[in-house]
Image (cartoon, rainbow, N blue to C red; front, side, top):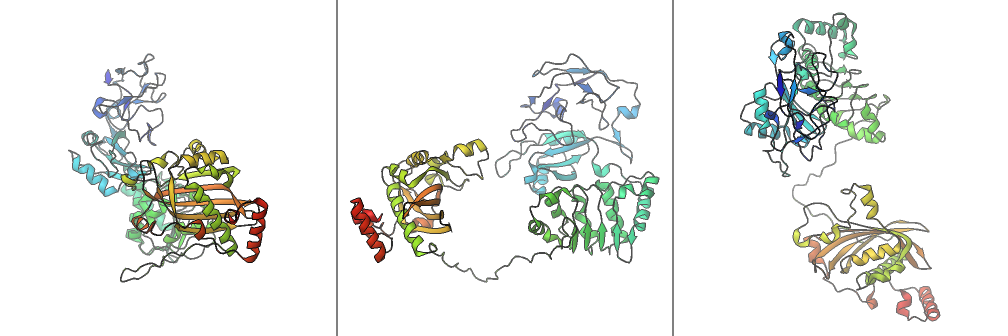
Length: 586
């Protein structure tokens, strides 16, 4: 009998979220089956006993846990450990198996090999050289990573023996990245990497070379490898050439390099290629290549195309790949693949030439950009209307009671507040008082919270504004931009500076941008239907310029002088309402 230690142990990391890896079915019991590869703070994952089976894997001599129905040579225990309890599981293994089956796997080139897949969750964000050198520096056993690659957000590679795997396991959580996260290393026993599987024998490589010579058009310098795996000549001799396996692709590239380096056109369509890592060397093998056909493969992301950017292509065929569905329109498609040459559309049509390189300014010495232009209103009438509105609005907003703003909002008005997200805000001027109400959709992904932080109806809007810190706005800093105008709607943005006049952040200077959408109210007024406020800390330059000039008094209002007709209307309104001229003008 063999004995396996506490089953179901696996490493726990909050960022991994307990997910397995693509190479293993979801019912697996974790990457390791003994304490040698588990950490002290590992947690037990229990799935009950119904599916507990054993099998002899071809990867090594261990006897790991696996799914049901895997092997008729083993038996299962009907009474396993209760959930969430560690227990030893005893397994009966038949000893009458051939010696080769009881030992580790043997690859086609012979020899026993115990392979392990090394996985770094979220390793995609790390540079390959930094990651490998950091691991090498801490690992007690020198190792050579085999087939390093990125799989979704993970970085993965293979090592060949248990001693190296054990040493790598000791490095887990001992490397800290620049974001202060611990780099986690997870080890799985594995089949040999793809580059070592199905390695072609010398006589098979000769047959592949003969097959490629039949598919080569010397007059066009074009090689057609479409559906190479189903080539009748290769199938008749039981030679399996799978181009999405590294070993086979490297054989093909080597034949190209040694025999037809002048190749101009290469057709790799219909070969179920899902990644292009192995084509990264094509630029060195066939430097003159101008046409590359990758149509009807399994490429899902345009990021795969980054791996063949070294090619100086004139035509690139991508139709029939899932990535074509990711582009909204033809212009998006062109921008994405223009760096690779002259692309062909999803339907095979020739698209415009690649976009020219971005325009750069050859400036010898630093220059000062021209100053920003002032406010834009579109017309003098709009200028009068908007400035009057802003003067009235902020005179109430900066008062001790903002309840007077009720008249400025529509019954069904909406309002939201956002602050920038990031550690760049210094603690002295932190925006903590705005944080709980911030609806920054770049950070906030929860739809329930997004809805909750959107203030509806004018009563809720003004109640919310009353809770914000008391302020004093520098109206001389205001820059107004009218974005859109119709007979029934006006959209304009206000940029400016204010300071807080009470609370923990008293005298802190802030910058703001406020987007108002308003509809007409009465003859000469506005009613807000949507109000978006963005608050950030003011820059040093903005603080220096703020509140230099005194705020204008009502008598020195920025509203332009009224025309004779407007003055007559103002006088008539004053008489009818009983208000003085100053208040009638508001």
